[in-house]
Length: 293
Image (spheres, rainbow, N blue to C red):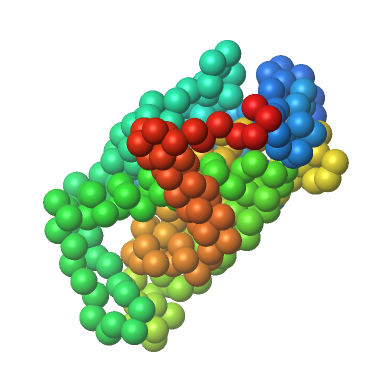
């Protein structure tokens, strides 16, 4: 059990089996999805249990605590991940859905706290593609940049969650890719030195956390395949989006997000842009009500 690779494999497998085994026994406790008017996928999802991200995250929490040897700062990041999940679940269960400003502000505060925990309160070393030397980023500059990255990945993933399985499946690939990179490259000094990438001793620990969550996500996706029986809701998509950003920042290169999660970022990013344009046009005076609404 002293092997990081063994802990990674056990965490991924146990988390997946735990979610696969117990999620069907617990999703009757979840609220039903209200669906979305004028959206085919929304009408199809109406009435299905939603907010399964709460159950999935709670089922994998003991596995994460046992498998991932995190330090105090790492537990701070873990707390922020679950805080983000809790806000998403409260929105899922609210009789009146939270407004964009409320959700965006809460996401911003969580992203800022997560960025501070990742920095450990000091300057951070970055590495960039095709650039040989590492770059030391002052804490005062790192915090706003990292907060922006985390806020964007959280909301882009959430905006991609409109179709059953889309955000979950794509994020699953992203998390496994980041886990392999954190363990086999960033956290392994001979490979990191060969590729001229700064070595992060904590890379393997973040790989265990990332892969364990990915294992739990795989267990959930078994029941989210078409025709889906349960939805993860904002509780799941927000946690997953934040974790993708955390993994990229822990690897020391935020541009890795573009490599491992391009579809989610483009799809979710365009959704955020559309929302911004609609709000702007409405403020100017245009009628943005959907036809037939």
